[in-house]
Every structure is written in C-alpha cells, then in structure tokens.
Image (cartoon, rainbow, N blue to C red; front, side, top):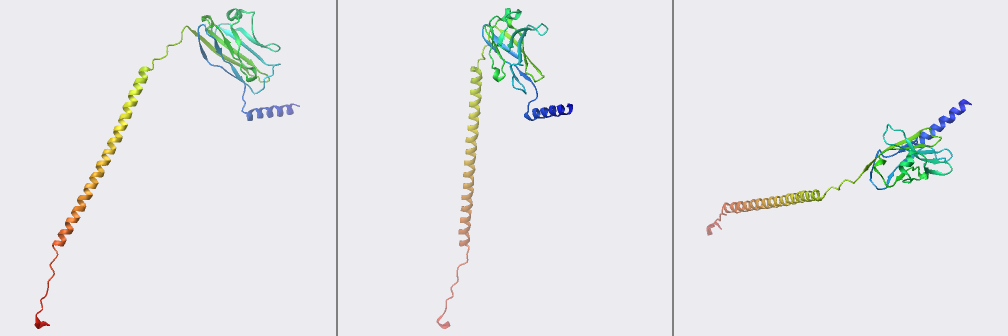
Length: 227
C-alpha cells in the first residue's frame, strides 16, 4: 500500500514539474501611492497548481498600521456568501463601507478598492490566499502611502527646446559634412581631369616633336648616261 502511494505521489510530482507549475505564488505591488480623497485599487492576484475549489478555498485581507501592530481582518471569503467586508471589528470602524471587492475569482484576482482615501488609511495591507490541495499559504504585503497632492509635472519646455537645439545643430553638422565631402569629391575629379588633360597635351606635343626630327627622304638624280 505504501509503495503504491509513493508511486502515485511521485507521478503527481512529475506531472506538476512537466506542466511548469511550482507552487502557490501571490503577486502584489510592494508600494502604492494614493491621493487623499480619491479611490485607489489595491491589487492582489495569485497563481496555483490547482484549480480553485470554492468548498476549500480561503482568502482574507488584513490591515496593520505598522509591521509591529496586530493585523485587523476587514475582508474575507465565505463559502455561501462569497467575498464580503467585515462589519464587526475595529477595521470596519476604520474603513466602513469604503472598501469593496474589485477582483475576479475566475481569474484568481483578489483585488480590492478603497474609496475616499484618508490620511488614516496609511499602513500595510495583507492579502492571504489558501487554495487546497496546494499546501503553500500565499501571502502578499502592500504598503499604502497617502499624499495630499500629486507631484507637479515637470516643465518639459526647456527640455524640448534643448532637444530641438541639439537636434538642429546635429542635423546642420551632418549637412555640412555631406556638402564638404561632395566639394572635396568634385575638386578631386576636377584635379584628375586637369592632370589627364595635361598628360594628353604632353603626349601630343611629343608626337609633333618626333615628326619634326625625322630625316628627309633623299632623291637620286639619274643622268641620261645611266639609263
């Protein structure tokens, strides 16, 4: 019996390794910035080797002001009611009806939204996921910071002007180099043409000189006596 069970476990492990599935993994951002008074999404998704079984699945969100504080659960998954916010603890007094589930269980998305963000919402948000038979308990931590105003956008006018100036200067430099190269090539061609013409002139002059230095043909005058 033990040997058979061992073979089955080994086969299951082999199938999991071939499928590329390792273990439970919760995916969350490390840090989220929120503007005071706005609605912010706090994402949490997970991967697992096993399909979700709602009769065994477990999920909850907790809040803690600092990492040394006790965690307060403010949202959980109920087998019959689904995912609902908790209304009977200190966390419910903090968030009230401002926190809502915004994920999709069919896509392993456990994200939430927090509306009318307040300065008191600063802290750490924990997303816990259990998806049996996966033995790993998934856990993700998101640090939320609340700001009163967004950073002013950078004035890109100067950067654009500098970029345009640099680009124009570079284009002018490239154009100057091309023109200079063309002029040099043209001058080189003219120089070669002049040298060729001089060479041809020298050859013609030498030919005329050679014809002028040829000896004159001699004529023999025969007397009547020689006939």
